[in-house]
Length: 61
Image 1 (cartoon, rainbow, N blue to C red):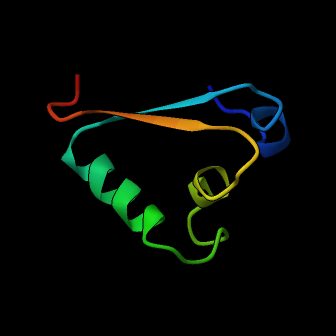
Image 2 (tube, rainbow, N blue to C red):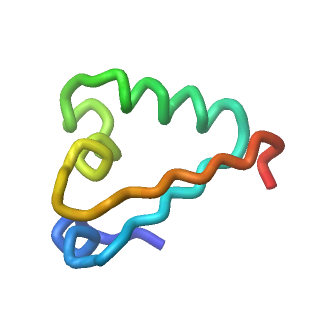
């Protein structure tokens, strides 16, 4: 499912499910900082309006 940033920020809580090692690397790159235009997920991860809970499934399950 894809939602716009304003729609996501109207949530009470955001859950981000990451599966597999490659997605974990992408998440780590996003958390390391940089421009939102480079990695749009940074807009969600770096905002302070809605708590974000990240769950990682190492085997892609």
